[in-house]
Length: 441
Image (tube, rainbow, N blue to C red; front, side, top):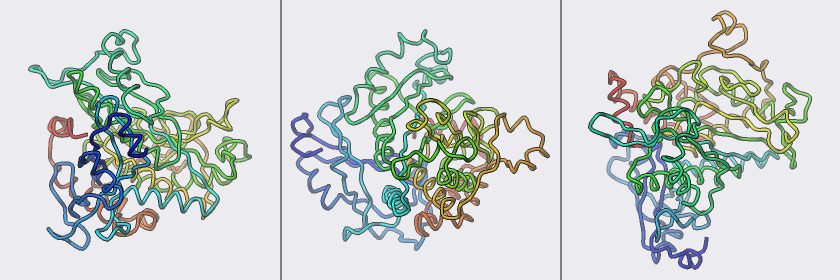
């Protein structure tokens, strides 16, 4: 939006927002008359924030800048949106740049944009959308108090959830919310955003979370996107993506498995082959691995399937009458602590590697892989994804594909943060992990 449009919408100040490598959303705020400058030259931010963990402590970054060095948070004015849920305020994502204005190698949003551009050189276009789950509640004298008690998707929750849902639907300009509803666990909610280009899709994911938190707090509650808030059924942040070439959806209408076209199959095969390393991107906290359990619809095995909610990569909408438009793949592993720009950028990097190498997929899985014998899983080349943050961090550290896509600096920053998180939480009880993460995401 233009400054004039923001001013006409009653905006007096703007929150400039980015997501760090630990998945924490950070912000600086400026009055409206400073927003133009923030969009040109940015506002300052210490370089060390590239190595911050979820507990606000810092790991040693590549090159060890120590206390020296500064970045510029440059607002994307075109993506700015007034916040109906917070009258007088706008929200804008930022790119992290070097002091001289050049691209900073550690910027996750720039990494995603670079992957989109790389795909375009191969004639590939990606559309993406996010499906967000969160839990609404508050800390009470008897422990965590949830907004609603279920049942899952229950209409009986409507008296307690209707005002909150309406506030979210009306809370932020530019959000295309396809649906919103109570989810499975007490206090859990979900919304699905409409597909768009990858950078804008991630902007919308971050904006939606900003709106959700604001609406909940103004109603006397708090919203948490933490992987687990108060129960063993966690909050996912699923990525939906489709692969297009010359205006044709490559995930349907072909002669490959499940009617995939060659480009779609190769892209998906690349993502499948990189799943162990991708797990460190999509599940960035020790708490994430309490959510990633077999038979919980979370995606914990290296497999794909057609409309199979236990498959880590779920091909959906590919066989119906609207398949040419709706066919997409859902990556189920990511949770609400994942940096969306990192996660989607890494998916595209892995998919393009598969495309370049013309990889082919194994057979789709139609059952719960947890029900297979270990021998049958090995025969089908189905393996358990990392069970701990430490295992995932080492899978990412050894991934030449993701290092090449992310660039050495960003890759090493993320690995350092994951290793630091794993070390900081080693030996911490499940109850303390849940308690300390609950209101940070």
